[in-house]
Image 1: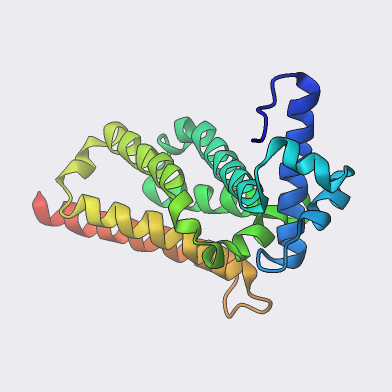
Image 2: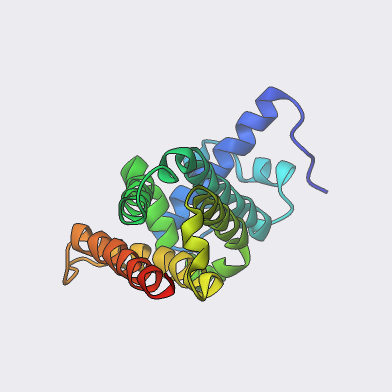
Length: 203
C-alpha cells in the first residue's frame, strides 16, 4: 500500500510527481502516458512512484485533483472584485483571467485541459462548477435586482458549463475563426442584453 506523505521532504516528492504527471500528460496525452515518463521528469526512480501511489491511475487522479484545486484557487480570490462590476465587465474579466491561468507555465494547464474530455474529466468538474456558482450567487446578492430575472438557474448552468468548455476549445484551436477578445465580448454582451431586456419587461 502506498504511504501517505507526512514529512516535508515526502510532500515535496509527491508535489514533484504530480507536477511531472501534468507535464507528461501535456506532452504525450493520457493514453500514451507511462510511469517511466513521469519518473524521468520528476527526477526519481520508477520504484519511488509506487512508494506514494498505488498505480499510474492513482497518480493521474492526484494530478487531476491538483488541476481542479488550482482552478478553484484562481477563481475564489477574484470574486470580491467581480461582484463589484457590471455583469458585462465581470464576465469578461473572469474569462480573461481564466485564459491567463490556462496559459501559465508554457500553457501547462491548457495542454492538460486539451486532454480533459478524453480523461472523463467531467467527474472532477464539480468543484469548479461549485466555485463558479458561488460567484454567481454572490453576484446576485450584490445586485438583488437580478433576482427578478426568469430562469436564473438555467442561465447560470449555461454560462458555467458552456463558458468553461468554449474557452478551452477556443484556446486549443490553432487558427480560431474569431479572436479571444471577440469571444469574451460576445459572452458579456449576450448576458448583459438578456438581463437588461428581462429587467425592463418585469418592471
